[in-house]
Figure 1 (tube, rainbow, N blue to C red):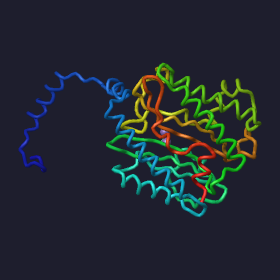
Figure 2: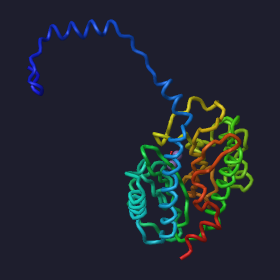
Figure 3: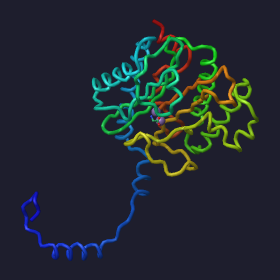
Amino acid sequence: TDVYTNIEINQSVADSFYNSVEKELTYHNIDDVVNSMRVLKSVIEINAIRKAAEVAVQAFTEAMKTIEPGMYEYEVDALFDYFLRLNGCPRSAFPTIVASGSNINTLHYEANQREMLDGDLVMIDFGAEYSYYASDITRTLPVNGKFSEQQATIYKIVLEAHNAVLAAAIPGESYANLFYLSRDIIIDRLLEKGIITGTKSEIISNHTYRQYIPAGLGHCIGLDVHDPYTSNYRYLEENMVFAFEPHIYLYENDSTVNQDYWGVCARIEDDVLITSDGNEVLSSDLPKTISEIEKIMDK
Ligand code: GLY
Ligand code: MN
Ligand code: MN
């Protein structure tokens, strides 16, 4: 007797039934079919991602106005939770990252326990979920409202790479080329400014650049914050939605990095809809240049 349904089961009849059904069935893995359907978004999906991005931008804007030395990382996390629930989003799309000081060196830091101090950078990576669809946005901010010289230098390089990717992300371009574009800008500028040692060709052929750019360029967003994309060499098409997140990580004690820059990291991540003749940045209302950030954080 099945203890839950109280139904009498004759095990040998049940076994022969399942065995006969199994023999007649053919199983196919349909991941490829479903994944390819997820790459191009419908209007309804795009509208959900648009709303998820809008709410995240709103929450992020409030956080920027609020952050100051002495605040704890989890207070920023709490602000995000508050704003997304006020705006029809049941939860964040992934665990919010509020990584200040040396925590910025940890790629997927989620503890959010530290007191943010004067002189720190804080990297905040947050996404709202709306109607099951994700947004995914990162900003890197000076906790005291003003970038130091080294912080500004690294930030500007990331912003240049980020803007170059946004300008090039149009139908017909490949994701792989966008990554090479951002990687090359980052390596060129770090070398020109004497921040890293070596030659560009060695850094590329030895894959040393992965020390400074550990997480590629980005990914599609949709039902999952990391939505399927069938190939890095596939061309961009209208109705794809990407999170592009160029970044530089200069780890403490990295002997290839000028010591003045140890521990300085930056990432800028926006959500981008590919349109018929270009793209639309769904998170474009969120401050991104140094002057915009310093203005909104000015108390
Ligand atoms: N927050 C996850 C990512 O940026 O990919
Ligand atoms: Mn992110
Ligand atoms: Mn991302």
